[in-house]
Image (cartoon, rainbow, N blue to C red):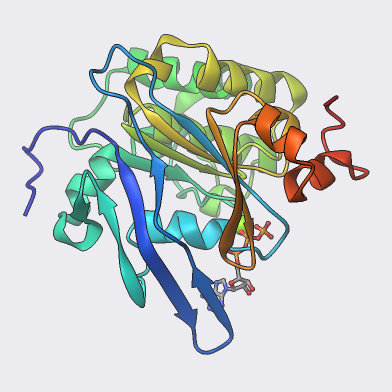
Length: 265
Ligand SMILES: Nc1ncnc2c1ncn2[C@@H]1O[C@H](COP(=O)(O)OP(=O)(O)OP(=O)(O)O)[C@@H](O)[C@H]1O
Ligand SMILES: [Mg+2]
């Protein structure tokens, strides 16, 4: 079993015929599929994989499976070729960071929320750097108590977008090798969303992590290395934006639909 002192994983996350039965209600059946595949050696770009699809198609469930929050009822999930349950919880969370649709904060200060779960207390510079990347620094620094301000019970004194920005900072400060963003920027304002997109696609960090980007905002997945379209728990289309647009299939239809990204073919 990998220990917390083990080297970082390469970030190769793979679903091997993984399926999950929800008490007979829904069956997620994911065919063999490498979700996040970094090219080695590391000087090559790691992948940004986008997972898109209609509501209830199973995107968050895939994210939960990848975090080892659920065990698949069939098949397995592999990180660097090894089943996820074989990793220590702490090890996984050291390298795999996820921000969910409705992130939970703790009734502590901003600083403690961003540093939450780290073994070594980070320097204030690191906390601020992560907050800046996530678009949280400007509103935190405007508060009289700054990073020492308490966020209220479960962060209830913050707006949805502010909660997301703090949760994003908490994930980024870990420098994760695998970053899972499950609709994690939906409440951010346009500027902050743009900053996060630049972080995913243009920053030097792009070369040191794999990203699974789940979003309804199709314009933000156009640059992804790989787009997976999920429906009814099954990946029914996969490719780049250009390939999927050419196919004129489900992804194309979603882009064309009112409220889609409206991206030209
Ligand atoms: N804990 C659970 N128990 C039973 N069914 C569940 C559970 N979690 C999710 N489901 C079901 O699994 C299906 C997929 O849900 P999931 O949350 O993964 O969809 P999603 O693609 O993330 O949707 P959205 O775009 O709305 O976020 C849904 O039909 C949902 O009702
Ligand atoms: Mg979801």
